[in-house]
Image (cartoon, rainbow, N blue to C red; front, top):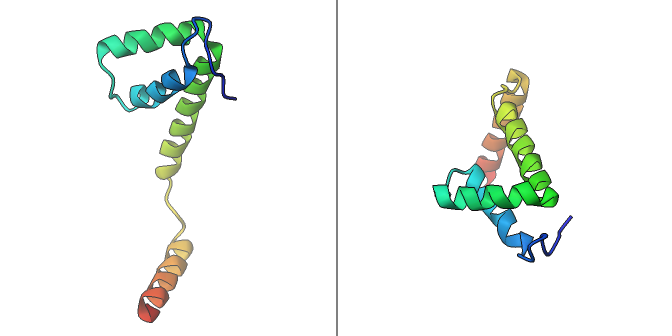
Length: 86
């Protein structure tokens, strides 16, 4: 899935790094505008951004689910057993 250049000749790998920073809220307004311009012209990077957003949403929703009590009890038993032998 790696593409080395976009239609402007700039390495997409640098833009792909910026996608993570963008989704983490770590880019300035100017950097966001530059990234958005790239995404508007590069379907490869836009697809990568959309996929990363979907993955993050799925992880976030999965983290909100509670494990069954039986599983928690079993895992705690394993942890206690491991700590007793370590």
